[in-house]
Each structure stands twice: as structure tokens, then as C-alpha cells.
Image 1 (tube, rainbow, N blue to C red):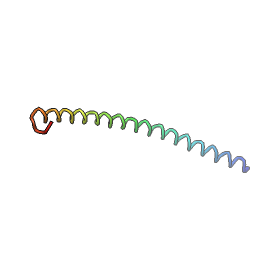
Image 2: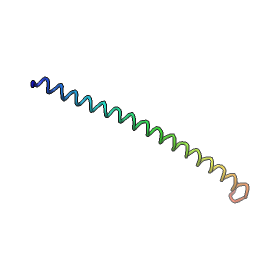
Image 3: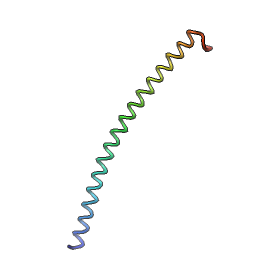
Image 4: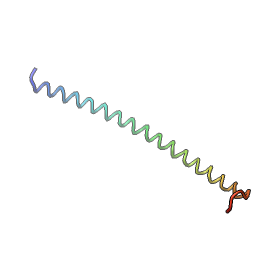
Length: 65
């Protein structure tokens, strides 16, 4: 086996590894995007609850306006 063939084999192996890593990164990006959407949804929900609670407290004169 010549040294050229050994280098080509290593390069093919490296390319395969990089392809796998690229696929994994795309999957991770998708999952992170999904988590970001869920987090944003929860933050919006908490903000709405906070606004409603503030209105309730003001109507009941529990806090200074």
C-alpha cells in the first residue's frame, strides 16, 4: 500500500467524520430552536399572568397605583 493511498484513506475518514458532525450540528440546531420557541412561549405566558395579577392587585387596592 502506497503512502498516497494511506493519505487518501485518512482524508476519506476525516470527510466522513465531518459529514457526521455536520449532521449532528444540524440536529442540535433544530432542537435548540425548538427549546427557544418553548421558552419564549412560557415567557409570554408569565408576562400575561404578571399583567393580570397587577390589574387584580390594583382593583383590590392591594398596591399603590
